[in-house]
Image (cartoon, rainbow, N blue to C red; front, side, top):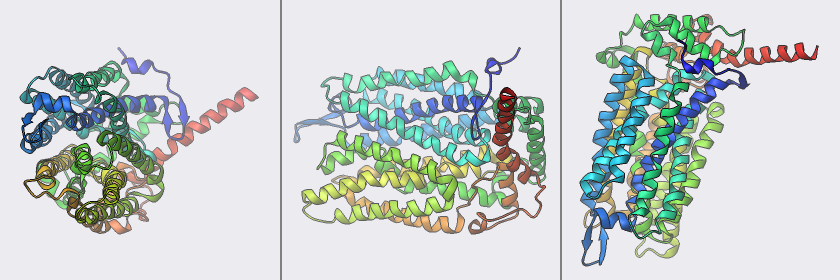
Amino acid sequence: MKPLRDYIPNHHIAGHFTVNLVLTNIVIAISVFSFGFDNVLYNTIQAMKPFKKQFGTYDADKKSWDIDSTHLAFLNSFPLLVYAVGLLLAMFIGERYGRRLVLVLMQLLCLAGVAVTYTSTTFGQILAGRCLVQAYIGMQEWLVPMLQAELVPASIRGSMVALFVFEHQFAAFICSIITNFTSKHTDNSAWRIPVVIMFAWPSLVLLLQWVVPESPRWLLRQDRFDDAVASLHHLYGCSQDYSAAEEAQLLKESLDEVDQVSKGEWRDLWKGTNRRRTMIAVVAAAMSMLSGNAFTSSYGTVFLAQVGGIDAFTGTMIKKVVVLCGPITAMILLENLGRRRMYMAWGTVAGLALLVMGALGTQDPLSKKYKQGIVAMAIFFPYARIVSFGALASLMPPAEVPSARLRDKTSFAAWTTQNFFDFVTSFTLPYLLNAPYAHLQSKVGFIYGSFCIAGVVWAYFCMPELKGRSLEEVEEIFEQKVPARHMRNWKSSNQQSVGVRVTQLENETAGTARSHLERKIAEVEA
């Protein structure tokens, strides 16, 4: 019996997009929207008075309810430990049983976490609910960038992987609008209304998951050649000129070449050219957190409330609108400027924004003008960070850099590294920001700004340029030990190599579809 998705009529739309490829990415986008909504929601509702009253303690001196720094650190950092469990679970299932099963199971886990959150009456319950959702987020981050990289052609892979960030940020923007309205409520509906909305997205993905095919590259690694051909045909087989069997054979030949170097075992991550690829993935993942992610995500609303000069929720909404422009900028410019140039240029801008914010914070006392300057930098910095450390450092390396046999494990190593540094920065940030500890407030910009500049220096020597290269051609580039600074203009000495031919085939897929369409139009006109 044929899968239900095989009954969808496939047609060429525009460029490299077919109906089935678009539908697949829409379902994935809904899942990422859920991830973005869930993640931002927990960070935003912490500043709501009803939430503080329900899960915090009463401060007699301030005559208000609040969540102390210790519990705030627990709520924002402990779930990251469960995130690691989600990564491990996704890797185990995805490597052995396929990507689609991960997609389904993580939606069920999300629904369970949302249910626990909605019914919470104690701090322990709300922490448990967030932990379950964080495990879902771990599975999501392991799966989506890698799955998109394995499904889309080389010429649009960067933009499609960057779309992961746009979907996340768009969800954050919608969440900010909802929480801005509900924050005016004086009872628990202030935070429970946005929580109940979270049920919608994973439920919708479960209804539509049959649209998404299994990764053809994963199928080939399982020696399921015919299924891989069917998957490729489902995605791109809208033209009689396209041969899914030919592309599957090329992918298999590339995999056979990889097998001569690596069998995909854990120790192979640090052998030969794989050592370089692993280091790129894990260092980039570390820099994505050390560049100040926790400052802008987990504690963004709390920080704006402390600084003053603008209403915290209004400031958060403005920031979300500005940040939303970040992934759009990346998608527009990425395939023209390339990974390295985008990373270094915008990474420098992000670092300078933080350093300026830190410098403004040295003034004592802080006048309204300086507070507004700090708020402006706090709102602008996430935009520059998303274009560089967000879209490029944390997504491109684990999606594009790994060897075929080690893609699952390298991705796990990268996201685990990112999770570790996310935990460290999230746990320490309240103590850096607040009294009676370091009480740096906006001067934390000096710390994270320095890491941004260090990340740019690292990128100059190590960040690869893989624009327009198929994953199979990436294999050849690393096997040839091409320096990062020379990758942009590198050409294989063998223009009939497997990697070059896969790149050519992927880039020609849209062309053959257009040619077929033009012939049909000509036949009708004749």
